[in-house]
Figure 1 (spheres, rainbow, N blue to C red):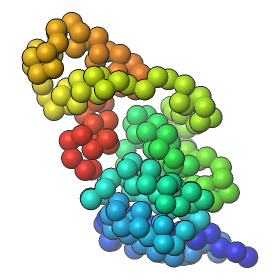
Figure 2 (tube, one colour; figure 1 turned 90 degrees about the vertical axis):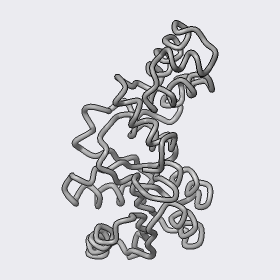
Figure 3 (cartoon, rainbow, N blue to C red; figure 1 turned 90 degrees about the horizontal axis):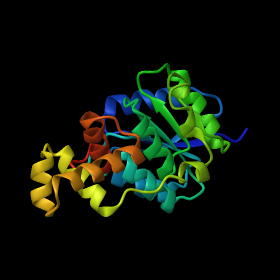
Figure 4 (tube, helix red, strand yellow; figure 1 turned 60 degrees about the horizontal axis):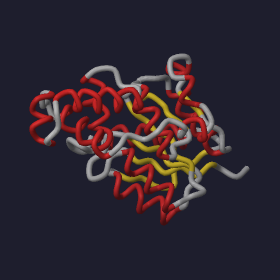
Length: 214
């Protein structure tokens, strides 16, 4: 039986070795490579062309979101499984939109990751069972997920400054806008991205690398 070839991208060595033991224990899977950061994951994926890459979102050098996009370019036939502790819908949306085929939580049973790898290897989407009911719409077709208009450059600037802790008045002064215009840009961007409050905005900013790599 041809085994599913898996690349593990996880910056914590202890966690990575635990994942390797889990994957190698499966009769239909084998770990063919490891990477400790996002940049290395992209390089290894391009060189090895594995069936599946398990990508941690919180990695140095290049976070999981950026790495997923690059992996999809370097290895188009490779499926990406996002592995993270973040259960926020915005994270799920962004990773799937970037090209991940599955999204699994680290706090879930190990069977979730195994099932996700098998599903992704066969070309099927997979969402952690603990998230399925809450973010079911995220698993819609790619066409449906991209139907919402993207945020504009100005909306991006406003959200980034908001995530950095600036008030509406500060943002208005920095961008030479009225406070009312800032409020409109903020509301439009949050509606498009389904963000609820500043906490969600900060998490989204972290995922995008606006603050720092995760």
